[in-house]
Amino acid sequence: MCGIIGCVGGEKALDVLSSGLHALEYRGYDSAGVSFFNESSEIITVKATGKIVNLDEKLGKMSESEKRSSCGIGHTRWATHGEPTERNAHPHGNERVRIVHNGIIENYRALAENLTAKGYTFTSETDTETAALTIDYCYKTNGGDAVKAISEARALFDGSYAMGIIFADRPGEIYSIRKDNPLIIGIGEGKNFIASDITAILPYTKDYIRLEENEIAILTPDLVKVIDENGNTCDKKIEKALWDVKSAQRGGYDHFMLKEIHEEPEVIEKTLAPRIGANGLPAFSDENFDIKRLAKARRIIITACGTAMHAGFMAKYFIEKYARIPVNVEIASEMRYADMIIDENDAVIVISQSGETADTLAALRLAKEKGAFVTSIVNVVGSTIARESNATIYTWAGPEIAVASTKAYVVQSALMVLLSLGLALERNTMDEQKVRVLTEKLRYALPKDVSKILAMQDEIFDAVGYLSDKTDMFCLGRGIDYYAMIEASLKIKEVSYIHSEAYAAGELKHGTISLIEKGTPVIVLSTDESVRQKMVGNIREVMSRGAYVISITTPDAQIDAVSERVINLPSESGEFLPIAAATVLQLMAYRAAIIKGCDVDCPRNLAKSVTVE
Ligand code: M6R
Image (tube, rainbow, N blue to C red):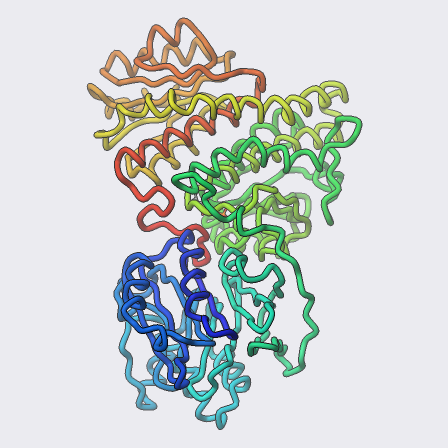
């Protein structure tokens, strides 16, 4: 989704904007732009469609003195209102005001009508332009009082927003507001920043403050002042980013996706270790999280979107198996409109890498409204979902930059297994020694198996060659392997653009098998030996109709006999192997994308953090 960067101070604000925009690329965008004050204190605006290099190229044509600036705002736009054209790219405004905006102003048509009646004209199709011109109007009618103008305009906006604002007659000042969209203020030395995402300012500072809803921030090179909705100056706490610049760089890998897959063994350990006691049992001491409360739930509802929801399926499997609590997994965007029966006897778990997904946040708010206790599993410290939940357990995966979620999914799944073991202990559904043995296996054998799989990368890549000219395929599994394949299928689709369907292997013959023809690729996951015979039967069904079967399995002669290609899995992690198998499937998706020449880290039309409905 859209990204915001702003810098005030120093002489090279434009360099900060450019590096910040590159750091924000991972969020997904289709145009970019900057507005900055030049040496004569005039606002210069430059925009370009497509990649940020196109914007760099335009800026590169300007002389050093033309580019010298100590204040500016920049934006990457992921189109919602209006096509991804230069005209619709941010910043928007007129000769008096320029803004960058993340989110959606829902009532923009009504605002536009009002403005038109007052003589304003529009040059874009965006909701953001109406916000900019509304601020301009309020600025004029408030005699050039910026805070009053922003506060008055804000009261007219319906929707969500994070904004960076500059006024032509206030060079050296940036203003900012937010509602339901993240924005932080970076505190530097002689320089201050605004950013939608900490990764954009990490090269300059690790100190930041969070802007709360309805607060207005005023930034100059040496001062950051935050004013609350009653006009009082707020005393803000300065926080320190836990991530460093290196963790948000490719570090020698060709792509972030590959780097992040290779980080999996390390981040599993980082996430699990602090939650395992010296006695080898799960011991959650996360802030506000009380496992006893969760253990008492009559039912657990897990809600999330995309890959995070698929980690929810893993959670369902293990919580039901170990702790015997019924679990429903709900798509967050559906749950918010479904009039669901939820009350204080239910526990809700929301899962989110970014902690900012609009649909997940809305589902969380709804669950709280209905009286449920909400625990979130989140990767970004202090994100909105983390702050609004009753309790939060962080995954320590570090920054995930590739749009396709990989390491976050693996740690979410591993953490949910640990949680289910903790719940089993609380509810006495499993004896302590069994919990200890499984906890040890999860902590040590799972990352070991993932490391072994990473060492098989060449073999895995080789098996993907067959997919290079294919447009459709299937991913089959049974039970937990089916859950793993739902995620695998999403990964293949989003990065390689091969249409893929995940199917419970036994369900295929109830209709979908009609799509299998000579050469159709079918990837099979079979880690659960209790249904091995059934799986072999299902492979025969598709093979006899011409499918090209690639099996990912624990070694088995029968599977060998019915598959074109077999990838044998290590098996130390036992029942947690479907989580390790995700690594194989992620590597396959990555390789398929590379072979097909796709932009693997920023797949078309996708955004990393989906902050609009
Ligand atoms: O940040 P979140 O985990 O809340 O994001 C949820 C989904 O948007 C996300 O998992 C999406 O499906 C990824 N692109 C999948 O790789």
